[in-house]
Length: 81
Image 1 (cartoon, helix red, strand yellow):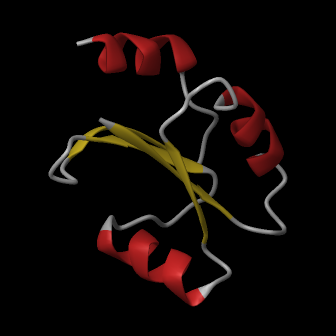
Image 2 (spheres, rainbow, N blue to C red):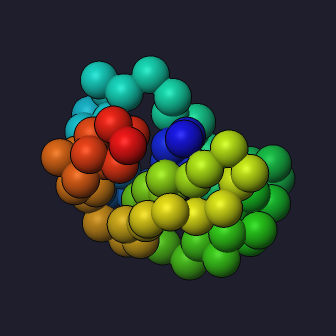
Image 3 (cartoon, helix red, strand yellow):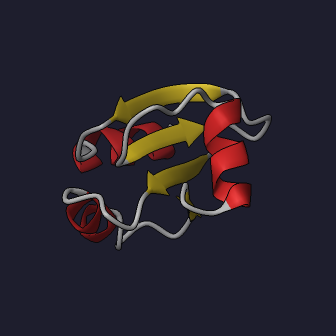
């Protein structure tokens, strides 16, 4: 499983979301201000930042936190499965 974090430069909650995920190895950060990040956000229908998705090896969404700081305890539990 992987963790995808979607952030934006002027997002007031994005720094806290980044800090919450610092201890995880498999975090992919997508800047929605950039074309590549926006394309990935569009694929997953991300409309708010910060958004965090936990996805399986096929890229299918397992759980998400959209427009909020993620629940790191829940993420750890998902990754332990």
